[in-house]
Image 1: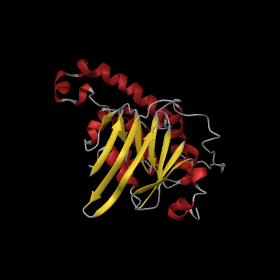
Image 2: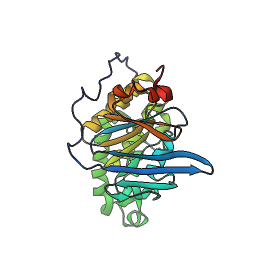
Image 3: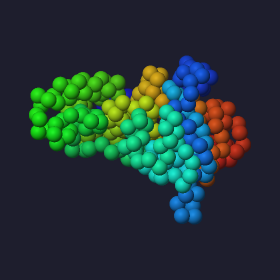
Image 4: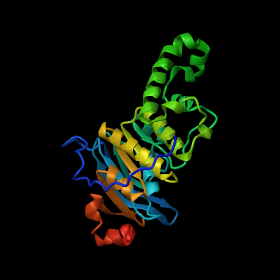
Length: 277
């Protein structure tokens, strides 16, 4: 994907963006008094918040604030010491990631889990849960049994790749892609699992400016289409343009929750993270 110069844009505040989410809808995610301890270290300290369907929420803070640990605890990779994680009113706290995924809570990773020796298309297809041809019985039964289902998923994967501007890369090996393109593949793999909500850990980290903006625009389009997003991200310009609200963490604690433009004036936020940015 060739890099294209991107004209600088002024951040658009949550108040100026078109309304996202469903007015008055019950939260799709409720995190209640979430705490994670590693020995004597409290990585996440009594964090509570809710996320309504169809919105994008940013989880920000300085390095070591506990953001990624909180995301891992929500997605099932880390078992919380205490607290609850309700997704669609089901408490997933302490349940493994595949259980969360079965309910539609899908996480992408800062270091992607894609398969470098498979093509882009193959990476998306192996992410489809329960695809008939992936089972031993499906393989034994042959393509006449599972071929039609796979063709439907191929068409869906092509649509996903088109949305991410990767359709022209479908037959390329993932190992030959740039870092930003690999992150788009990771997002595409997550979409193939039919998520109700995506958890993203620094989707723009280590990506050149052009591709970072492309990832941001792809996530914005997904949010506008009604997909719920919770993301950890250090690039505050992207957070301000993409997220309807932000949750600020410092030293494992949640210290603020609201529109990033409003939070810039709060002293505790300035002291913890935003000062000088």
